[in-house]
Image 1 (cartoon, rainbow, N blue to C red):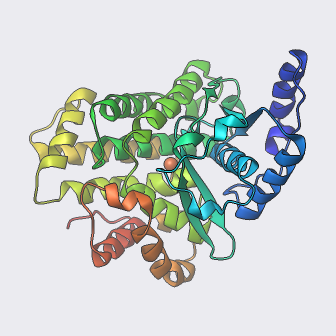
Image 2 (cartoon, protein in one colour):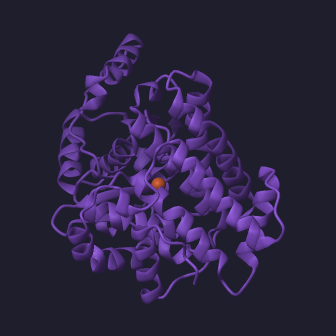
Length: 359
Ligand SMILES: [Fe+2]
């Protein structure tokens, strides 16, 4: 609905109609799109029979468009049965264009789809290889209308994707370069875009950084910061970027505390690339965490879940669900150091209290 309110939907529709396309707008996607919304979108698509589906908006709209596309082609399919190994022949019926209007999710360059099950009250990740966009339009004029809080939250998502994708168990030469670039751009331009929303260069760099990070973690997967962020987001309805951004420094500490030094070495390499001086690998990790925390101060973001306004009694009541959801989140299994359930609970407690992870 915001896309209609801000005039973005009209801008895209006018351009398409100008070159002879017929356009139907479906504007019922809510933040954290639910399965009933996707079912409804699928019905609208089957009636209108489009050659192209266009996802216009933030990650919720882009993910919803991917899911609607699947329901358009396969009306009877249960979304829960989608897997990354089967063929769905989506392009025999339509193609998909993604136009992000926020600079964060990278949904324009990944095949992941995150939906919400309103009955179970949990987020739900689907992976369909074919749902990656045929065309992505990365136009920095769209995110210019993002309010400051959204600039901060979506920018933290870029950093969480880049940092997670950089150390993931599935990391590879392709993801590494893109994730490092995502980190560099995020650190340099997020504070600028936040402090001066009219800084076109900073806006453009952050918009590009979101897609760069999407290409990066799309080839290696995000890690525990996303498992925790997804779980906290589902239980307390916290903005996705903020939820994963808060967890990020704590998960870095947890990985770096591992007996094996592999991940510590990755952070030391990153610190060298970022031009951070350090004594040894432990110091490199401390400096990177310190850099992230001062960046969070610059963009006035809370550094713990306890500072987000969630009531303590609600947090305590939801704690077990958060642990359970995070433990079974798809990002959990590519995490470079996989915590036990007990460790996971303790990490989540640190994220709530703002206490360093020392184990
Ligand atoms: Fe994310």
